Length: 461
Image 1 (tube, rainbow, N blue to C red):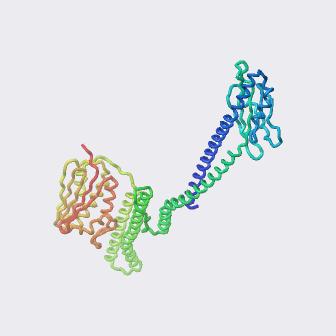
Image 2: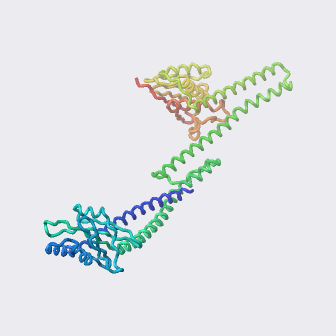
Image 3: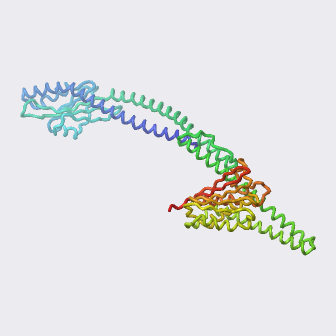
């Protein structure tokens, strides 16, 4: 079932239930009001007649049965039936004479007892064939102080007018309820459609993404409401997913390319040796040396790929408080032979202590120094500045063009493309620094050199 129909059903059920509850409550309250009004009207109309007879009864000093018949007849109308009961609750007289007169309602003993106990009025509704009757009991009190309560009058009258009014009210309530349900249904469908359209668009986008169309977006306005925030989060998620998938594809392609060259060289030399094309022992040794070199290259790139995989997996760090200047000094010692005639300088500053994994920071800094050596002239200068949780590797080499600077930390990115290495050193360095909660940034001026800055949280002393 579609979402908009679910909303419409819930709204209709809620409105229908409210209509039912309110209609029933209103009808019952109105019914009780009309019953009370009818009882009050009946009492006001017949109480004077009863008072006249009670006056005669007291003046003539007669018992109630002597005037009960006359009282019942005077109280009887074409739409009112009357009974007179004595102080013991027994029927003394009935006002019904003609066949067309109304039949008195059955006497309710509990109502009579209430009047005899001192209540001034008791009523109940008696259901008869074709409708209802209002039955009312009022006390007969003698004007003589010695006599007190001498009997009870029962009056019953059809509630035809009340039932007719309630019937008309029911029709009005039913019509109003149907109109309300219809209007609510239309509004619920419109509102449900308003809510469902964004979800349907998201559903279509999700299906397209599941088919591999990672360029698709929700195409919803990025507002401040829940739908807008959902669209914003969804589009950001898909953008990151697309970027990750693209990076993965590029990574696989670049890795295959980097592995292909050494494997091709190995395959060629093995084929030559297998066919015994190379007969000169010196050339055979040269071929073996070449294959050993290619195996070393494969081992190197695989080790770097394993390092990247460990960084991506979030491998735990072996943190300890170390002096970044000491790590920088050891890295410079490692690269003095490779640097040749290039000058390697170390500038120590204050607050060089940091809580890091020393082996990983040493590897990251080594990659930065190795990159600087590759892009610095043989007589150039490479300087490492340490202080405040920051290590900056600065060279005076060829520099990097502004349009290429944002890509230097991408995996397998090399510039120039024919240069040495695999394009993984800076990517590994950035991964190590970011795993420490730090940042690796680059600044460069073409023709004047490059500065790579490694920043990690420093330990406050």
